[in-house]
Image (tube, rainbow, N blue to C red; front, side):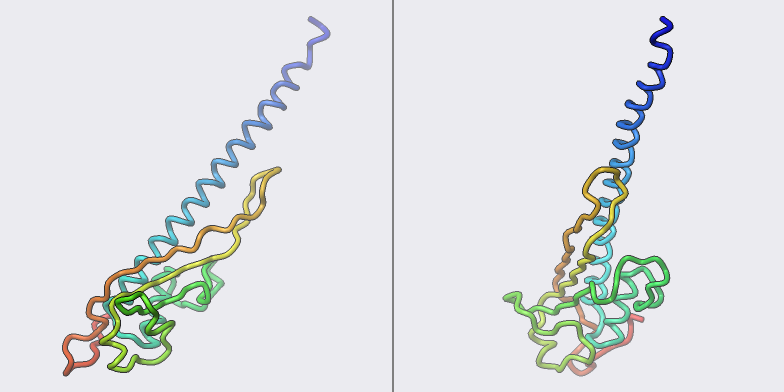
Amino acid sequence: MKKQKGINIVEFAIVSLLFFTLLFSIIEFSRLMFIINTLGEASRRGARIAAVCPIDSSTTTQIRKAIRFSSDPKSKDDGNILDINDIDIIYLDSSFNPVFTNPSTSAPDAKYESIEFVQVSIGIGEQKLAIPASIQKVFPPSVTTTLPRESLGRTTTTNPTTRQCF
């Protein structure tokens, strides 16, 4: 009996190392799934705004604010992992060919008529994990949401744009 005096401490050290590695792996995997789920929700929010608001730079700013859950789309001081360059807003025709991408000006009337779908894509790049003795970087997939166009901020052809989105 006297020769096995410290065996419990050694067993605890081995088991606790495996247990805590498994526990932190589960926490990090859950955090990664949360990020992917949040990106999906953010792309849906952005696509919804793009489908109902006018095509111009203020709408692009509004979409980026909604996607980043932030009042300032360019700020990185709020701990947000998204950058404005991670977000693509694409207006598509009926064949899914791009008509207008990341608008900075208003779309001409001819382009309004050919738009059938709105697509918002978000890709964030690498994320660092805190799992000991494992892969330290992962690349979450880019998330894309495509919705059919709705009003695009237009109510009739005689009233080209409305400002009901803001």
